[in-house]
Length: 304
Length: 135
Image (cartoon, rainbow over all chains, first blue to last red; front, side):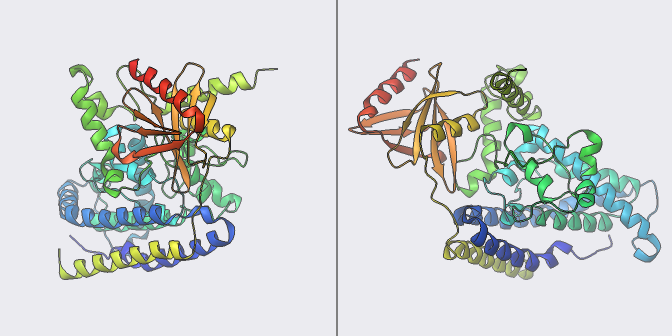
């Protein structure tokens, strides 16, 4: 397989400088945007995520190369000849990311791996680095396989995926309010992504985009940030702990316990149904939370 | 893992510890307290969209509170970092009364034990916990 450099490695110094810049902004505007133990947890989760990625990297690349042998079209890597393919690859990779990300919030098996990224009650650049340890185990790489079947070379796809990840770093901030209107209309922005990290019922399960917010607008999952409803960040059942290991595995432990305790006919449902689903209705899914919230609002604001 | 990978990992760990130290050294962070009963109710309702608090037992220092709804359900809210976290108080929660203090031990070990200084109300809330335990 042709090899290209990993753009994320080159972006790391910029990540650290931007993080420190954001901390200085927080010092002036709102000191509560950072908390030392939260930052340490986020950054440690990110570091171990890199180790986990390195350990399974060969398997992911091997699988990609294997799938690529069945490709439909011959697409080259050389940018001068294949510039349009690079652009198309970046675009389609972002669509694949949208599909993965939406599933990561709607299927508990994928959520168990993705929940790490949402487990902080803060929203700052360190949150961006709070990444999964168990992505390979939850099979998240499956979503990119169609790109190899089309004919995009694995090196091109992985390079585009790296650029996608770099783009998503800067949107994890409260330091930026809104970008210019045209930019907010097309691109994922801090404002759109704040909504995605929100636990307010209004904001649950929205804005799954990586780079282009157009996917959410096309597939009906877009919710705009409102000035009259500040975002509360985290997960529906806040961790209440800075334990790094617990942050990484708590949902997997939850799945194991539920599958063990559930009646036989419901065991699989605790893996593939949405987070919060239970066979006896004793827990709340995001749809149920939204419904209860809407019912509460109807009581508080009776129709005129 | 190659030597280059190990050096990269070592450098990452140093950078992580430096940034976390910097957050502390810069004095970033907050000391969140539950200001009053209305604040406690709001936090409990935010934690559970269907919960409507009607009565509150607030720790004297404002670190934690127990909120009860009209149906007798109770929710524990406590400070966590710059924010708050909440859990329902059910039969699996152990409560211990020690003079003016009510000490709650949650089944979830990572959530920890929460001590509330409730003054003369501690006994009443402890007996409510016993009712929950009895079902």
